[in-house]
Length: 322
Image (tube, rainbow, N blue to C red):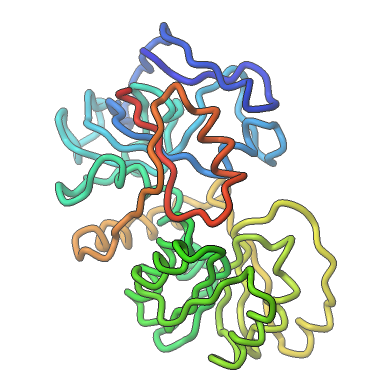
């Protein structure tokens, strides 16, 4: 099969398309998926570069979330059969490939209402959104939620989930296109985080936020501390560097800063997110937004774009059939 392989951690040049990679062998509690689309996430680039805290053994195939059709099931799998349309949040063998294995507990049936590209946009974004809002922040109906950087894949998923559980949602984006997407996805208010003075505009509109989901903490964390309400929760989802903050800001408001990392999620966390997302697919509020689709051989471009594109509007996806 064709697959992207990494033999050495480093730059995007280390992403190599190989044509004779063996099809992975399915385990007894695993599903072999003929992959149609694979999601591209910022964490994929951190792993490839060797800077992430948890690294796979070399060589490896990148990618976690994917969608496609079941090719084979393990001897102890009962929920799926050959031919089922599915999506997964975790892959045992790596999803940047024509075939990938996944443990059955991380696999969902994919509604006919969603394309394979949309299916590949469910995994990391929606599981992260559920873990951030429900499991970590313990969001309650009627609370206010600021999503700082809401036009990307995780931000869009977070808007949809936040509205589904009854939160008042404020989103920020850096472009007119991003702001329109955030508004159309369901945010109650939208602000441009590249405009000078936008923090004061947010404060004037909502006073403060009970929950803040932060996609770029190394830039915004002190702003979040200024914006969060008393006993509010700041959930750090993305960060690309360090930042100096004033700890007194947390003392004065008794606010909390907490991180989210799906790589360290417990089985209980993932099962709870799995349940919520499955219900969301059935109820129709899970509506992934795909920004750009790339052929499998353009994984290098996708890795560049997922980190460097400004004003991201949705999920980047690899089409593994091309």
